[in-house]
Image (tube, rainbow, N blue to C red; front, side, top):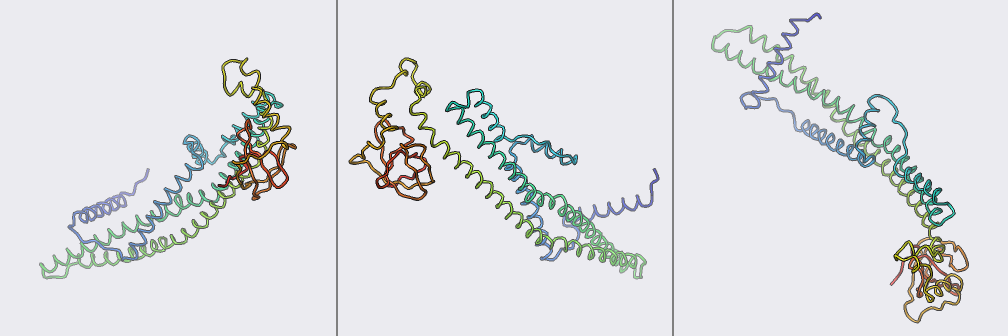
Length: 368
């Protein structure tokens, strides 16, 4: 390999001169050219922007992908310029397991049919999450990464170059000062003074040029803030759309599941699952309880409001009655509610004028 010995020696000499100047500044033995206050403010603002952007970027990555192994895998695929394999996320996987379990338990059973509905909802939630992650990665994470890996690297490179130019400038000032001091003692004009003065002019020109380049880059941080502000708004909009979609999915699921206690009320296997060690003790319900359940499901019109204990309730969501024993509801309306002995705790008797029927508690806000 062909080495340029003169250039190598020159570079080594420059490096040594800068090291001597830097060391002297640290010990306060030599003068240092100070940047103006505006330039220092630009540097401080740039450093603050870089530090906070990096923290926000890293924490957003954790928020969107809590699994560190998955983040490392995505990072490696990105560096290899390859597409990350598509895999089901946790919500989609849970929904898949629930629906497979329903097939095993029997989709016609209360538990199996509920697993199907909940599993379908979990898969839709997983799909919404996948869409949110993709949108956020493009609209928010990518611009932050581009700044850290692009603009900031350019700024850092120019700042290092500016620091080297400053060290060269201060070294030239020191050499000129020494040459003038030697000249005054020798009482003659020295060629060293001319050489040092020329080096100082060159160093000053290069420093001023590099300072202007760096200043322009630092002033561009304002544009970076504007760009990141727009990306932040897009991230908030993506979050809002995602959580709204999740809420709607869960609201629909809640409406579907609100009808299931009606099926559980007459299920003799429910008491066996909920408690008691003797199957014989769960084979029959007490006469009073069985009578109350039968009255609740079949003869709701015969139930009378108690003298005390009735309350007003505000309806939170629309509800369609599953049968004649239930009362359909409209969101935001006020109804009178009360309970009767033996009734399932998830249900109340609701009255609206001459209409009466069972209503699910989860659809109500009880008022004092």
